[in-house]
Length: 182
Image 1 (cartoon, rainbow, N blue to C red):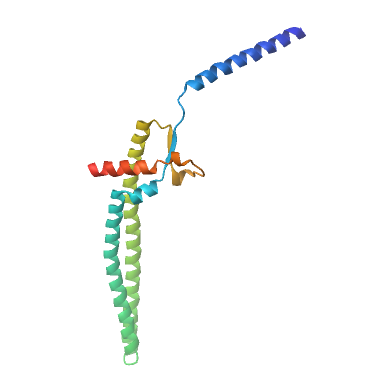
Image 2: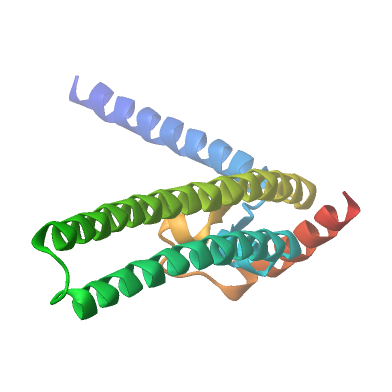
């Protein structure tokens, strides 16, 4: 009986070896994995469309900032006038002017907060639109070039990569070319 157990082990060993050899033959037949990464932030900031979008947002922000600066200057002038006239104004007049300055400061704070919130929302919408288009370009590139996996450099936590795996320049060129055709 002890002999049959040993014989069973040999059949198990040879059976397992055969399975491993057959599996390794099929693994060898699989094409090699192609991996790459893209720095989306770099593509967006250096692409023609990304630069144009950010220029538009900056122009809108500059225009709104002029309005805010004008309101700040008005409030400062009102405060300076109050300080100059404080000795000749009645207590009621001083109180009215102080209240008006406080009201204008509250309005300015509200306008500034709304402006910052709207600007952040506008930038986010633009970046999301660019990312949506960029994702299509990367997906098409990956399919065309036979990549198994392409990851985004900033979000994936890439710690090390060979420069050959960096597809950012190719994607930027393709993105700019694609966008200029529209």
